[in-house]
Image 1: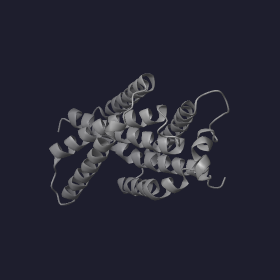
Image 2: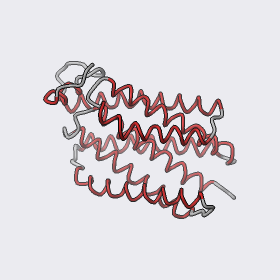
Image 3: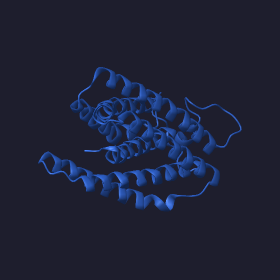
Image 4: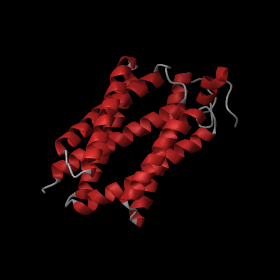
Amino acid sequence: MKDLQPQYRGATVANGRFGTAGAASPAHKVLRNTYLLLSMTLLFSAAMAGVSMAIGAPYGLSLICSFAAMGLLWFVVPRTANSESGIYVVFAVTGLLGFGLGPILNAYINHLANGTQVVVMALGLTGTIFLGLSAYAVKSKKDFSFMRGFLVGGILLAFALSIGVLIASLFGVQLQPLALAVSAMFALLMCGMILYQTGEIVNGGETNYVLATVTLYVSIYNLFTSLLHILGFASNDD
């Protein structure tokens, strides 16, 4: 399917491959398509994480997959979001992030006495938080657009701090309190992002379910990894 004409992008995407004609409002169709694609990408990502864990993928490969996924997110997804190829790019992004998550999960499971419980707890908390926030945003139909500037600024700050922590660790300087603070920041910001993005869909501010899916998936991914870090530290007796 070639790129869509600009004047038809919103309506066509809402009624695209994952949509069906009906009496539902455009916002409802976008929401339904987003959740359908999101559920499929989460399952695919989980499967790729399972493969990565089973083969014992090294941590270096995890970093490569993460950087490759970031490249697709920044440079490819925006250019393909209005075409059918955008769906395949979304699966590529989520597959890479899922595969890259495998070595991280193995590290928690193998190096913590209750590592499996920590992973399951982080997963359960992530699912509960996402479902709760999504239900609130859909039911209340509140406009969370006022959060946009705060979320953008907060995410940029948290990202810059995380890079600083990473660089410091390369020189043997461990900034564990700062790393935990960054994880807490990301967890709160991702909760805000879930509210914001769901509110945008419900109120018609987001008409492209591909972009909406990517935003929600990345929010869930970052929320899970942040909770995993916090719970892992709390459970570590060393």
